[in-house]
Amino acid sequence: MTEINPEEMNRDLCPVMKTVSVIGDKWVMRVLRESFLGCKKFDDFQENLGVSKSVLSRKLQRMIETDLLYRKSYKIPGERRRDEYRLTGKGWDLIKVVLAMMEWGNEHLIESGDRTLKVVERGSELPVRLSLLNETGKATDWYSLNLKVDQK
Amino acid sequence: MTEINPEEMNRDLCPVMKTVSVIGDKWVMRVLRESFLGCKKFDDFQENLGVSKSVLSRKLQRMIETDLLYRKSYKIPGERRRDEYRLTGKGWDLIKVVLAMMEWGNEHLIESGDRTLKVVERGSELPVRLSLLNETGKATDWYSLNLKVDQK
DNA sequence: CGGTATCCCGTGTGATACTG
DNA sequence: CAGTATCACACGGGATACCG
Image (cartoon, rainbow over all chains, first blue to last red; front, side, top):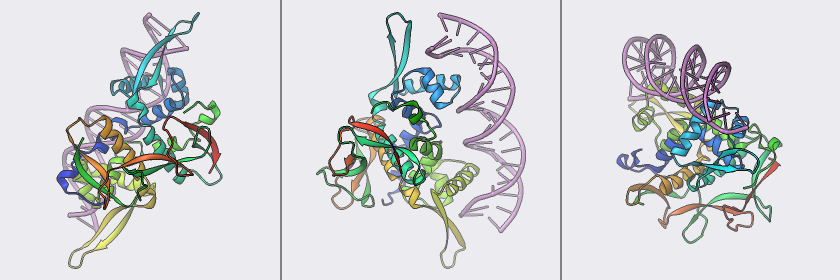
């Protein structure tokens, strides 16, 4: 990746900076990881994450405000009404970030021989990896990238 | 992605959790983003990030300890010796996380019509996107994923 | 210029108590 | 069980002074 001029490097323009401002704290990605694994209930989040209830409460609220999660009330007949916390589409789309972190963690933080989690394709059970494709579907080298200022 | 049993969900086993513990704070990804854009000098990091010198100093030290950056001393003839902070291979490998964040930010945090940063293939200038490939090089659907406990 | 050490302060965090 | 409110505290953060 090459340098671009300082005005274009402006962090207020950069989607990476904006994303970090939403997910770049101690808890958001951990909560999301639980959500991706199917966690929905307050107490399950609390137990799995080992976080205090007050912090979790505020964090879930914040993640609802930023539209990563939504609260859905449900009722099992004979039991009382409960709420669960589910991924929004916007939250679900962070799957790529989670998978990129998983790949990096497996590559650099897991010792050889240690047990770890990997992602496989359902059905074939083949392992999958993140790759860069251009519009023609052709794979691109990680070192052949340029930045470009564009409009959405 | 489906649920797996609680023992396997253990956050101590999970590469995502381990990764978050390394990069999941306010500054690491911001510093890395500057590095990917070619930033190397202490003062440039400080100016671009708008962070205090003391915080930046401690953060760079920590990122050197975790092997994301290394310090390289260099000397321009006639000037005094200086240090610069460069990405290690381990740090560079976080490019996928950065790109995933960039894609997500462009998708969900940038208004239509706004200027933003995109990644293109050098040469063709074609935009590139992250995609999931299995071992045969075939693209996989984001919704057809399973988790598997494995050894590295 | 290129940092580090010290101090002070605000926010994030956990423990506890409390409510429906 | 499913949270929220309150409080005390540690830690991250900026300002400043200082050093090479």
